[in-house]
Image (cartoon, rainbow, N blue to C red):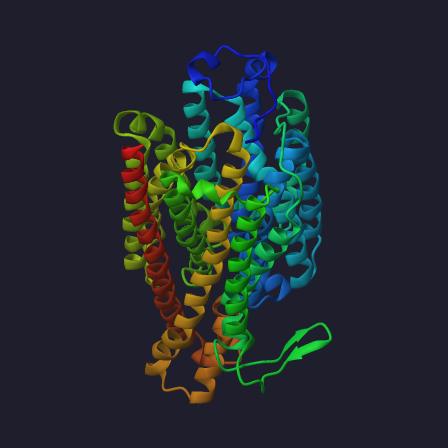
Amino acid sequence: MSADTPQTPGPDDAAAGPAEPAVDERAHANRWRSLFVLALALSLVVIDGTIVAVAIPDIVQDLGLDLSDAQWVSASYAVVLAAFLLTAGSLGDRLGRRRVLVAGIVLFLAGSLMAASAESAGNLIAGRLVQGLGATAILPGTLSTVNATFRGKDRAAAFGIWGAVISGAAALGPLAGGWLTTSFTWPWIFLVNLPIGALVIVGTLLWVPETKVATMRPGWDLAGLITSALGFGAIVFALIEGQTFGWWTPAADLDLGPVTWPATAPVSIVPVALVLGALLLVLFVANEKRQARAQRLALLDLTLFRLPTFRWGNLTAMTVAVGEFGIIFVLPLFLVNVLALSTMGAGYVLAAMALGAFFAGASARHVAARFGAPQVVVLGLSLEVIGVLLVAWVATAGVSPWLLGAVLVVYGAGLGFASAQLTSTTLSQVPPEQSGEGSAAQSTARQVGSALGTAVVGAALAAALSTTVPQSLEPLDLPQAQVDQLTDATADSAGSVISQGRALGTDSPLGEQTPDVIEHLEDGFADATRTSLVVAAGFLAVGLGGSLLVRKAARRS
């Protein structure tokens, strides 16, 4: 069994127990400065996962994106995080977490520059992929450094702050995106990372201690990296592109370099990708078991899943992230295209989530001290499920933004309670010497859920639009060809055709019919939004069930 590098004991270590590695005096003295820097680095990664959401309608119109492109702009970042987090966590354990953290920030800033200067969907997605690669080196290092630096009561407080940053930053992202897009232009949602990233690098070099594992098993587990990355990527590709290439019967040609999967094939590429992805993940698990038996380095120590809180906590984190990030993807499209809000206005409505999250996150530690962290997670997820169902209930084309914001406060409060305590609960039984592997696995579960959330809930939106838009247009008695054209245009443009038609008025190709058509398209998009929100609520409900198992396991430990 490996252990962190031995260090001089600090004042907190007497209470920490003999099983935990000591912390040197300098690291102990700077621990709160270090936590601030790590929280700032973490906020960069988390905000960039949600800041794009509210700017998506502007990006769609500026770069001519379709719904599939819009999903990839959001999901590509999370896909890379899910694929490489385990590798980055292992690299940090081996080479030094601070060193890998700084390298990750540099790469993240390079990706931000690429995204800000993008002039096409492909360039923007490429920039997001580079950002995601940098984020993989940042995220596990922040949590494992906190776990290796803090002891006793300080550790509980540090984990609470870390969880509050996750929930608060995720909810604050849309507000920041709305302000930057409205006050400047959408590229500034990426350019703002540059000065913040520079501050993080300086603070990291000044105050964040270098921690790493003293002895590690040999090898790099390249097979694990390839099978996990391709497995997750294939599944997310299938979920996002199902509407484009057909869920079973091929709907379009797919060009894969010199090879083409034709529309005349007996089956679409989508089910093939789903099966291939599942098989690759099975191979990943088999490879990790083989690496462990051979006493070689494995990306994921599967024995950690024998710990009940770790097992059920990761299941909860993944399913909850599906719902949370699906909501963040769908709501801005509804607010801008159906309620005709500006990007800033949409940011203000979504800021209600941040308001609830901040207050709940700040009080979560005190509530946990009285009722226990697992009970706070259950409370938070209960509020999330209730909040999303309320949003789905009120999200009609005529809803007041104020009412929607008030309901989102309930959801945000649940987000704050659950996120602030889920991390510490999940890792509570993980030995300190395995903190890098444990935190990377926990972060990977979140990012897998994030990528799947955009894909699954986005697919639910697209599927619902194919039904709700024609139904909403029925009273107008339009020719079927025109109904089909409007349905496809609404889905392909992620709803931006509604905003465009509203802006053109009777000058649009629909002429005098434009106001009536736009009104009915708004109703159809609102109905599809409510359907997709119910799907998101279903995943949150599964997460709630997982949290009950976490609470049960924690009581037995």
